[in-house]
Amino acid sequence: MSTGRTVEGAGCVTWWGFGPARDLLSSDTHRVRPHGELNILLVGSADPRHILKTITGLTDTDMLHVWVIENSMEVVARQLLLLYISLLTPDNMSLHKKTEVFLEVFGNSEIRKETEETLKHAAAQLSLSITNSLSSDSHSHPCLDTGLLKFKERDELVRIFKLWERPLSVPVSVRKVWDARVRQHLGTRYDSRQGCFDWDLTMKLHQSDCGVISKHQYVKWRESGVAFEMREGLYQTANQSLLSTRVFNHRGDRVAVRGYWGDIVSSPYLSFSIETENKDLLKKHNNQHVKTAQDISEVNILALFECLSTRGSSLLNKDEPRPSSSCCQSTDSLITDEKIQKDPPASQTHTETEQHPSEQHRQDLDLMNLSGVKVSFLSPDSLSKLPLKNKYRNLFDTIFCSASMVHQLDSSLREIAASDAALVIELAKYLLDLSKEQVSGFADRVKEIAEESGFTVTHNQSSDIYAVFTRKKD
Image (cartoon, rainbow, N blue to C red; front, top):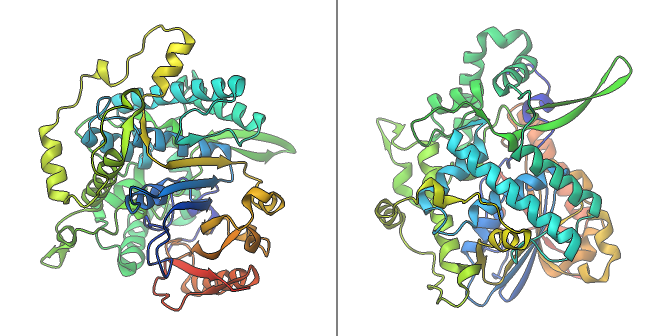
């Protein structure tokens, strides 16, 4: 129904994925689930959904190293922010509040003032930790490694975090830039945009197994960019983590414009909202879903954070015994337990005090340390260079590639894949501006690229969201 160009709907910056979270080591990707020292390469995943989901399937003895490649440092900065929020200790923020903050930062163009303060604090801590790593070669956190980035890339991260911490004196009006994107995308159909929104929802998303996305929430997001209203409050503060710079040619000059250049069509609901292990959340009454995409997102994120808390521990309390890492606690009990907890006062959530730099550095480490889990960020141009380094030869048990980065795959991929590696590629099912023929053509092209790279399609292929391949035997 939309008449605009595909690039204007999906955007030129990928802030979230176009498919739900997957455990990239599960039976859906491997004939036999691997255990021990595991390595996963994420190419353009955009958000930490696969990282969080994969951690939930680990055993106590598994060690997971995730290697992340994104196509811009702005996306890397946001990945670090979302992982930072995920690793906040229960002492700093309760699970329920952390869930709310995560979803607001993840999917809202505008957030509450309280959430903005959390974002600024996280940006300040991340900036400080990366600055310290530049001078001392120390990691910002045992689970978060930026040491493999180039110095100029880490400098760029610091610049981005400082911009989040202290936004421009003349703030960007997110509502205006969002509306400008919608106008450009719809063109002459802008005046009948409500009908366009309804068409995309009912004839595309609902027809693609996304019936839990309600009309009210989807239309509100398409109008304003606010997907998750977790609490009553004013959502009027720009979410700096969703703003980025795009360079345009204007009368022969190159002009940098800061604004929102991400997805305005498919929605952030795809990552955590359209699937759940709790089938009660998918029940219908009078052929209408009882729960909404926001409800399901909240339950799914809460369950993921509960799993993190059972595996992790605060770095400031290393010697305390860690609970069992079982993540099988029911969703109902998660919610019940969470209602009993009380959020710490705002002054305790993050204390802004004048401290010596070394003391600030120790404060920055007050995140959960997930036993045996590490996430390393690589340079945006590093994919083609990995086969040239011996440390990456036959290393990765699973390689994930997004739809936006699939063009970077080539035959050298085989050299960095383990003998029984799986290749998971995001398909174009939820790129709503594409026709069915284009979606099908993209899937065919993905298969060709995978086969040219030394992989073959798995026999149990059943998903039209992700294509799964296994490495061909030598």
